[in-house]
Image 1 (spheres, rainbow, N blue to C red):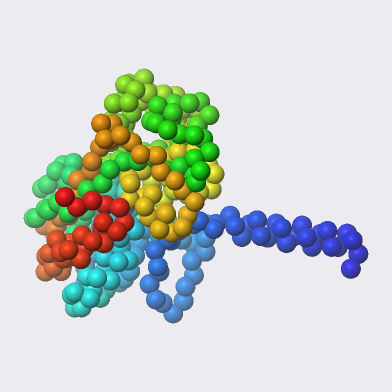
Image 2 (image 1 turned 90 degrees about the vertical axis):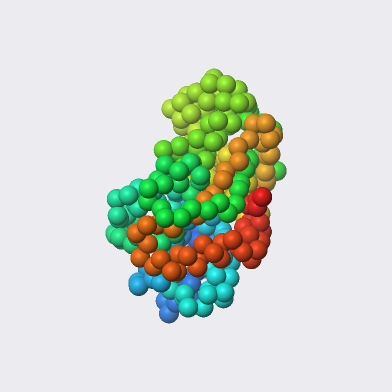
Length: 303
């Protein structure tokens, strides 16, 4: 083999290795269900926010998206406690998108149209209150606070919310149009720096492209941090806990209590629940110490 061929071979090898690493942090971060064929192709065919059995489910749950990390443990524990329910379908899309799906009756993802109505829907207290006419039962089950996710080592040296106003700091910011956390983060900006800070981050930097508004913050924000596309991402505390559990290179900058917000999560039973008994059983399970310990494991708080 001549020298030119050796160089060409090394170039192709390095290129292949580089491309192989392009998706090294890609979801699904959960454990996929057992199946005869697994055909997840990173960047091409990957549906991390739909879980389980979409055909003839015995229970359908719409979780606020940032709870994707509890699904594996929670469903395994529920199936052990209630073995009569084995076919469960779950969505963990943004709560505002799930609300529109409930209200409109369908959702299309790629070429897949889903018309399932949920038995159980979970979201923040404000969203549930606004949709109260859809539910026959509601209950509070956990809480969460906001923090700042940064790359390991915090290379941009972020120490406070006001640092996000710096021209060269790239932000992954949840879009308030469908992410409840977006409004709470804006409230924290206002506490920290008034309307000037809100406008700087949410208007000026959006126009300049240094604030990126996510569509699915529980996926996009960590990925933008992990792939070097953002210097900081306001997220729920549970997001950082989970990425650290996965061994991913992220760090956290805490937001002081006086500038922070606490989210109250509520679980509901739909009046139109296709499986009302299954919904009752799942909501009862959510009140158990087993379920609460799972939420605490992933950074949620139980008061």
